Each structure stands twice: as C-alpha cells, then as structure tokens.
Amino acid sequence: MKTRSVGKQATILKTSSRDQRGARSSKEPAVVAKGPAYADPTACECCGAFFTKRTWRRDHPVTHALLIKAEWAKCPACRQKRSGTAYGRVSLRGAFEGTAAAALRRRIINVGKRAEYTQPQHRVMSVTRMEDGLEVLTTSQKLAHRIVHELKKAFGGRAAYRWSAADGYLEAIWRQ
Ligand SMILES: [Zn+2]
Image (cartoon, rainbow, N blue to C red; front, side, top):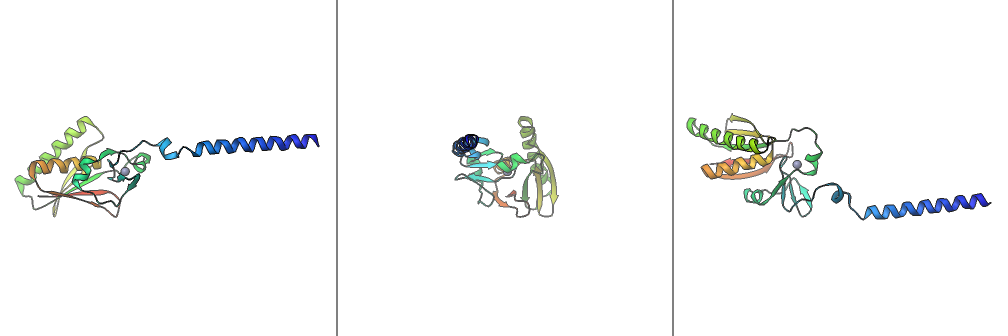
C-alpha cells in the first residue's frame, strides 16, 4: 500500500512539472525565437517574396518604388534551402539593335561586377538575346532589382514586376 501511494505521488509530481515547462515554452513563439526579425517591408533577395504585416507573401503586387523602400533579406523558405536554383530574372523588352543592345549589355555586366565585388554571392549568370529583347539571369532577386534600377537611371524606361506561376519567383520586366 505504502509503495503504491509513493508511486502515485511521483507520477503527479512529474506531470505537474512537465505541464509547467510546457506553459513556459508556449509563451515564446517558435518563429520569433528561431528566425531573424524582419523589417516591414522586407523583400527576399532570392525569390522576391514580400514580407509585410507579419506575413511572407508570394502574390503581393510589387512595384519598383516598393522594392526601393524594402529591406532585403532571405525569407525563411530560402534560408532553409541548402543549394539553390535561387535566381532573379530581368526581361528587357524591346527591339534593341546593335549599339543599343551592346550598351545595355555593358551596363548590366558593370552592375553585376560591382555587386559581385561587394557581395560575391550576387552575380550576373547570363545575358541572352531573346526574340523580344534580352534576358538577364542573376543569382539573386536583389541584384535583378538593382539592374532594373540602374537601367532606369541610365536609359529611363519603365519597370514592372510579376510573379511567375511556374516557380513562384518574382520577375522584373523593363521596357524603354
Ligand atoms: Zn525567398
């Protein structure tokens, strides 16, 4: 009889201490404890996802002005990816002839070189001639936006952004 009641007490003690621990840890949300605090707004430098009002979204309308205001960081999904197909894409739309195409290409390469010098992970991967203009692939969305920004400064034109349904990445489109 005596042994049984001791056993019962021990069980009760264990349970109550476990409950206390559970209550304590539930006061700290896992997201806040593990991840970095993001500014509002933040754009993901890899996929272009947009953080505002405490959520990451991949369907938010994005403008050039909004991206200038945003801080750049890696979203939780991109932080988890070990190796990446993470990239940025800029589509330059227009019938760019010889010298115009060369000037655009030069500008893009220069912006890429500067970015790579300060942050080696940001690189221009390719500049390809397409039927409707040029396509630039970069290792980050941040650099894609940077390129559009420099193109606007040097050549004017308009920028638009759209979500690519296939891969969930933000695509920048520049037109002169
Ligand atoms: Zn991301």
